[in-house]
Image (cartoon, rainbow, N blue to C red; front, side):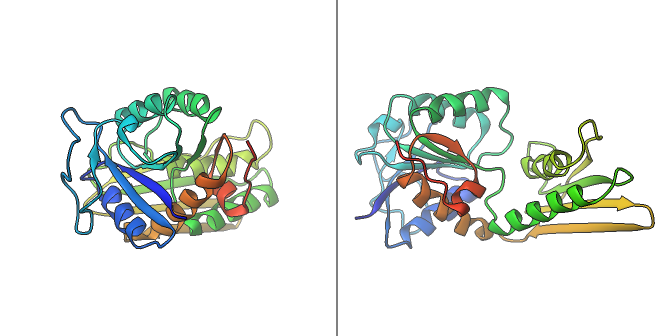
Length: 252
């Protein structure tokens, strides 16, 4: 039995890649493409090669498959609209939209009381190992050490600093003693760079640099597919990619 998947967004880079990945996975089925723009829905609509047969719908309630997993890599307002609709439509959610603020996280928490929700600033599985190293480094070094993060993305990325940069800074600060200063973050939006994050930590007489660079957005797809399968099986709750990898599945 396949898992029905709805991909939000018609023209976004990640939306197109996720659709193709779902179409190539034998245990997943592309049930629909969701466009929350006014006037969407009612036919095959836009999409990349291989999308034929997956209808475009303008509302989550128009999806015919029961309890799909909805994947969303769009923009802040579209994600807020999706979360609002998800309160009354049985589904699970995988959210990768960047730049989410306090309002979005309140909506995520509300929806998560009824639905399985996976949310991550970055779906790279390799980044989980980088994060673990940053925590270990922060925990093992003394109070003479400080850290900073650089954040490089393509020129069109709107949020600054990125969610990944804030995630790495929080990983460092969370492992330090209470009251320790938070790492500075320097953000750059240049050219067509997909994603590059570097944490630099330094103490007396030594320093450590950790670099994570993504040159192709397809690097995120293994994490997205794992999150889809996880969300389809999990009970209500808001979880992270780390929960997905460690298999923390709640029973409703």
